[in-house]
Length: 406
View 1 (tube, helix red, strand yellow):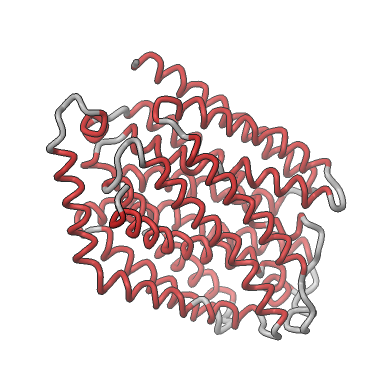
View 2: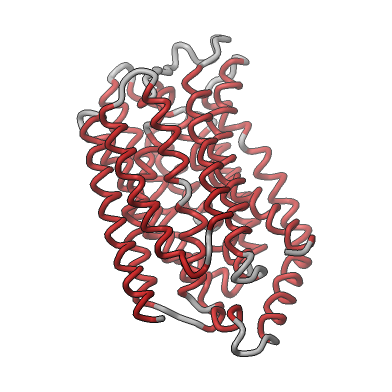
């Protein structure tokens, strides 16, 4: 990977981090927001924010399918500008502490703008990298994204410590979105030139070259099985993230926000999510194109015992097991994204990433309201353990299908 491509991957990864900061903005202040809109009724507040999360995640997933079609025609850099500016504006609306119907509209619209990122950003990376260095590039992309996931609760905790409440937290998130959107706007032509040069180099390769073969290959049956796996893992992902702060057992409420008391629930949540960077890095380093199916199966299978452990854990052990689960669970992303590139042709790559994220984030987003409705955390994590085991079975089917192709 040369210096130009590395810089592009890093900058696209920053946009990835912002996508997950916007995604985690609600879980980071979930209990405080629930207290503002639902008062002291904890279960009602949990159900309220569970559906609010689904309202954000549904367009984040479903919108990605439509966005994939637009990216193929309008170009990824322009779509990234729209995503960043749009999310920033919706954060401004949420920060005004609007009425409940308007809050749901703003969250739905923010999720719609955020849905642009993955088809656009991943298409950029997949088109300017090769089959051999793509897993490493996607691993770096995932690490920066996981850092964004961890930054959301960390920034919230620090702002609360400084006496700033949750509406102002959303107003603060406007600034980096507009700044990064402006950078992509002024550099959009140069980015398009880099991608075009990379695609032309791939077309000049001999037909026997793995990069040329992969760029023309389509394995649709494997792709559809993979997206079903993504839907199951997405349910675990959305439910885990949405109520992680509650799981850690430290109740943050409107009453202590902005009281110049360090809210350790935000800090511990950030540490747990930062552990996901370790998983992203390891997966990016260990990923091998010929072993991707086996690797994603083992990752899904490894999720199951940690989720069962989370169901039984109490006290400080909850922080320990949540951190370990975060490492294992986030190993999924670079492997999964590499498989999408392996199974789909360059000409339909954006659309395929869009469909895959519709399944992972849209259908998978049902995990948040599911977790909100289940009465106990014990039941919640046992159910998620079964779901992850189901994903591992689908991974095994991918291994069989890949062996038949070979």
